[in-house]
Image 1 (cartoon, rainbow, N blue to C red):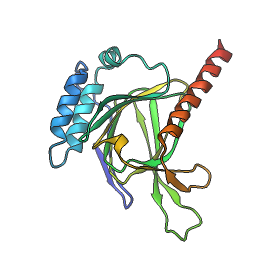
Image 2 (image 1 turned 30 degrees about the vertical axis):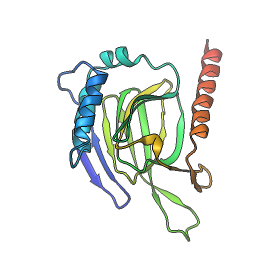
Image 3 (image 1 turned 30 degrees about the horizontal axis):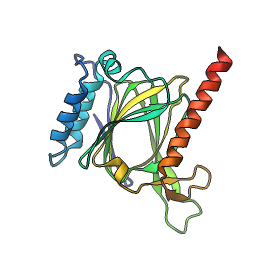
Length: 212
């Protein structure tokens, strides 16, 4: 594990392990994570649980289905924990945003590039500045602190699939996003987010149609 402490957040990256693969079991993943989230420092054990779940891609895809379109699938949602299957369309980018809770993210197919941002003083001409970046490949996991602001890009020409685990009800908190051009902060709107995924799917369909 590579751990780095910054003034703006805490980030821990675990690179893909070459240990023995373990068959993916969604019920077991949920059960193990719900037990681990009750610990004083749940991120590290949940990261290990997720890494084991990512170790056998074939069984994971058999359980969840091969990624076919950009979407966010709820695998578990509760007051203690949210587990999502997030699928990014080719070249899809999500605006800088926060979570207001810690997260553990693991890639099971493709690649996810993260830019991490820090807030600037109120009198600055800009609201954010880039503070770091991480490229996540298949079987990599990353722990994100509750104050993290990041943007996400799928930089490759195929779908990327990732399991996102959040330390609370991801859909039950008011979060922020930042405009890509002005960096002005605004409320993160669920409908607007859904439209971005649909726009990415429309672009994907047009690309596939053109290449056929």
